[in-house]
Length: 230
DNA sequence: CTGAAGATCTACT
DNA sequence: GTAGATCTTCAGA
Image 1 (cartoon, rainbow, N blue to C red):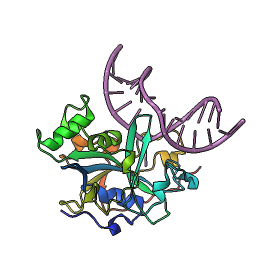
Image 2 (image 1 turned 90 degrees about the vertical axis):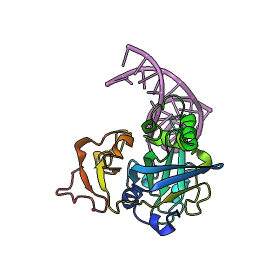
Image 3 (image 1 turned 135 degrees about the vertical axis):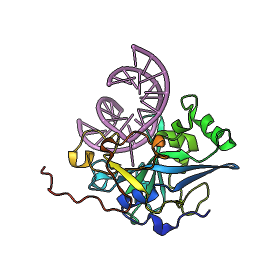
């Protein structure tokens, strides 16, 4: 199956975050193709977003990939031991991206691919659902590290994304992003975390969605009735 | 140069 | 639920 085109990524981060749900991340490692369905994402929406590495226009060696063209991988190292992978969205020089938070591995138990993921993850991941149910975990399982930073997913050399098969507009869970420290509630609580709502996908989420707010993946964000005061 | 924090995960109570 | 691991990155002095 072919990978998605450049234009797929050239949309606002919130839109790409929804659009990526159900798509398949493919990682070529030697002769193996490790595949995982994207079941959870988070949008980081740019210079005004206090939770975003590019907040207030910050541009450093670490986050420079966020300023690259849409479809570029932005991988960074955190907490002294984990990598996180993002997909750059929007326009060139517009530092917005989507964090991949969880995948559903798409391999039979006992397959060479699944065993490779288990070997990479170590003894903590006994069940298939523990292989990729977190941003650091999925990077470890798929061998994604800083060498993957700035990879062009459109070129599809060692990593790319394939379109989702079904359904065209899945039900989506929405909630606040995970792991952000204290900051303005407007951004800390913004509904920028998205997950597939289907029963098959739910066991692979990194954490449950509180409140079970469900909507169609193409639906615009609910319109705020009253502007929060600051 | 220094120090504090970090888009996390695991193990243990 | 909470602590500890572990080290890069960045802001500020």
